[in-house]
Length: 480
View 1 (cartoon, rainbow, N blue to C red):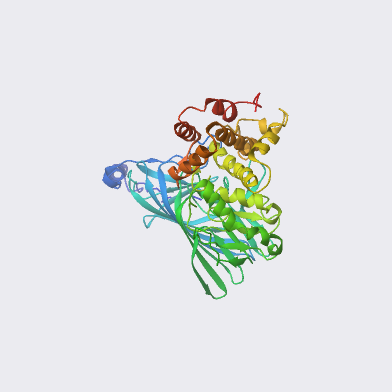
View 2: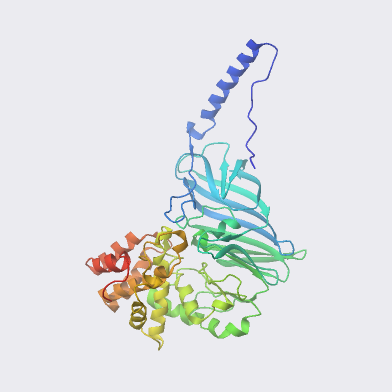
C-alpha cells in the first residue's frame, strides 16, 4: 500500500490566466519547501535497498546504522495472528530523504519518523519510509512501525525453513538465519548492523515467551502474560529469537565464572535431555578456558520439541536446539558460536566459515580433551574422503551461492583450516591466538581478510600455504 500524501495540484478556476498564476505560485512554494523543509537545507537521497552482499544482495539496507530495536509483540496462538510495534533508533550515515527496512509479509498499519507520520511504500520484502524532513548525515533518528498479520515461514535457498515456525501446543519458534527475522519484525537485516534490543512478547497465560538477553520483567493481566527481555550487548538480526510454548524454566543456575543460566525445556523432552542440559556449566567453563571470557551477560539453552525447526541454531545468549538435534556435541557447537558468530560476527555471509569452522573445530577439541578422538584423528578421517566428496566442492571462504552458505565445506573444511593453523603455530600459540581474536573483535564484525592478517601477525609470518591451499584452494589438497 502507498500512504504518501496526495499530490496537490493547482485548482481549476475561472480563467486560464488566474489558473496559470496559481500554478506558478504553487510551484514556487513547493520548490521553496523542498529545500527549506530539510534540516539545514540538505537535499537527501534515498538509501539503497540491499548491501550488495555477494550471497544475499537484497538483505540489509544502506544509509543508516541501527543502534537499538524495541519490539512489542502480541501473539494469539488460536488464530496465528501477531500484532507488532517496532521502534528503531538509528544514525544516518548519509543525507537521507528515505530509507528501507527488510520486512516480509504482514500489514503495515502506521509509521512515523521522529514522531511525525512517514510515507510508506512496500515492494516485495522492502519497506520504504519517507520522513517529512530529510535526515542529515550523523543525525540520530527514531522510526516506528506498527504492523499485524500472520507471520510467514520463509524457505531458504538450501530448502531449510525459518522465520515464524509453528510447533505443537500453540508453540512458535521465531528464528532468523540467514533471512528469517524479517518475517516478524522490520529491520536492517544484515550481520554487519548489530544493535541492542528490548523484546516484549505477550502470550496467553500458561505459555512462556523466551527470547535473547535477560528477562527484565514478567506481568499478567486479563489472562495474558507479557515477558520483557533486554539484550544489552550488540546482536545481529539473524541471532534474534523468540520461543513460545509450555516450556519449563530453570533460571536458578550459574556458570563457574558467575554467568546466570536461563534454560527453557519443552516438558515433553525434559527427561530425554536432562543429562546433557546439566553439563552446560561444564561446557561453558571449558570453552572459556579455550576461547576466553564468555562474551555475554547470560547463557542457557532452549530445548524445543522434536522437529520444531529441523536444525539447531546459535541464537544469542541461548541457542535453540530441538530434540531431534539435541546431544552433547551439538550443545558444545552451538555454545561455541557465542564467541564465533554471535560476539565476533561475520562481516558478510561469505565469511560464514569463521563461525562454522571454529564451532565445528570446538567439537573436535572437546572430543580430544574428553577421551574421544583427537582433532588430528578427526582431520585425518575427513581428509580420507575421496576427491568427489562434498567437503571438497568449494573453498570454505567462497560458497558459490546462497544455497551453499551452510554447506559441508563451510563447516568441515573450515574446521580443517583451523586445524592447519594450529599445526602451523603450535598448541600454545594457537590458544593464545584464538583468545586474542575473540578479545580483539568482541561484539564487532570481522571478515576473512581481517582474520588472515590477524593470524599472520600473531604467528610472526605468513601462513601462505594454509590460506592458498586450504582456505581458498579448489578441490582436495594433494597432501594433508
